[in-house]
Image (cartoon, rainbow, N blue to C red; front, side, top):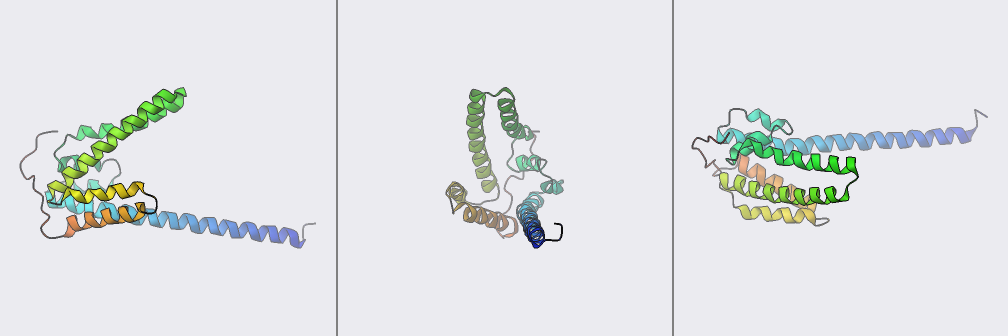
Length: 176
């Protein structure tokens, strides 16, 4: 029975679910792009404020760590800390090793501590009080994490476009 109303009802239900899925994916893409540019635009401006010649690297994922380490006067080889996390989890999954997964998780916590230290150095490089980073604690609290992330993005915009937040490490850096 190809012409029954039951088949038409099933088809309309599938069409409705498909349109909901398309709307959801579209919203996800738009929100991702907005949040990406909400972070990279002030980061680009901070690099321009500091006089970094390759400020456009702020828009390239993973490559934006190099100028970030230049801002805080750390060696660009510090980016290798992030690859260790990925490599550890891939090895843990490959060898089905719980011990390796635990070691990688502890390593991830150490990298998180380093990220906090690097964020403090970034705030100090532009004369911002590092106590604002206490908002990061809100990122682990349910229902506060979104508000804390928005607050940190607003602080990044204030540092980038506000008056009185000039780059303080103007001396030549030879740590590369």
